[in-house]
Image (cartoon, rainbow, N blue to C red; front, side, top):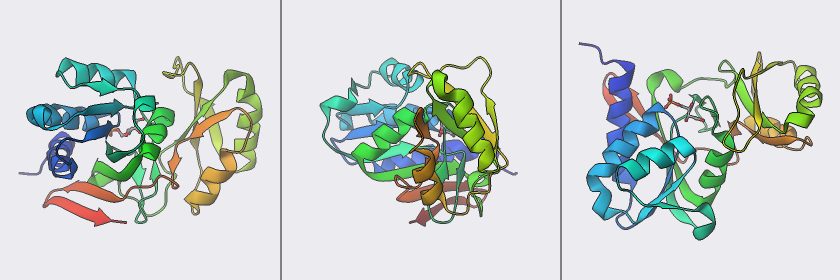
Amino acid sequence: MAMSQDELKALVAKAALEHVPEGAVVGVGTGSTVNMFIDALATIRSKVAGAVSSSVKSTERLLGHGIAVLEANAVARIPVYIDGADEIDHGGNMIKGGGGALTREKIVADLADRFVCIADASKLVKTLGKFPLPVEVIPMARAQIMRRLKDLGGDPQPRHNYVTDNGNQILDVRGLSITDPLAMETAINQWPGVVEVGIFAVNRASVCLLGTPDGVRRLDF
Ligand code: 5RP
């Protein structure tokens, strides 16, 4: 029988445990796949020193399992960051932020030596951009940033009734075909009032564990 999307997510969440070195502080992302990873991490709780979390939601889940959560400022480097993605291309570049946690996710990813992406096979794409690109903005700059995103050919919409953990707004941008993720990430992040764009090219995945009906497919980048 075909596996459901949730079963595929559970499969890669469990497989990610092999990428957690003993005694490590682990970087933990946000989302439904990561929730399953946190539940799996709880089974080896005594073998990890703790976690650096990318969202209030993940922090609550980690603490609920009795896993210590450290401040990002308290660690210099961490060996691994584990997170999902909304889209990932064949170069390991990703769109993230469907769950709104993109800024903290990028901060924790930037602390890590390796980014292990866990995703079901539907997330693998040829070109990023079908999934609306999230951009976290300072509210005062919203209209100016929307104009600039339109100039790039996108159709930005403020995320309704949503405030990030950092107190900012999210614009979801439809209609972009992101053929050069690094260039677009770098360009958008230069605009005043952009807190972070949900393109992860600078901090792209080192490896992706992709849940497929045939099992876990590993992609190295
Ligand atoms: C949250 C994210 C998530 O990684 C992304 O939305 C994937 O989520 P899910 O595992 O629920 O499919 O970037 O900001």
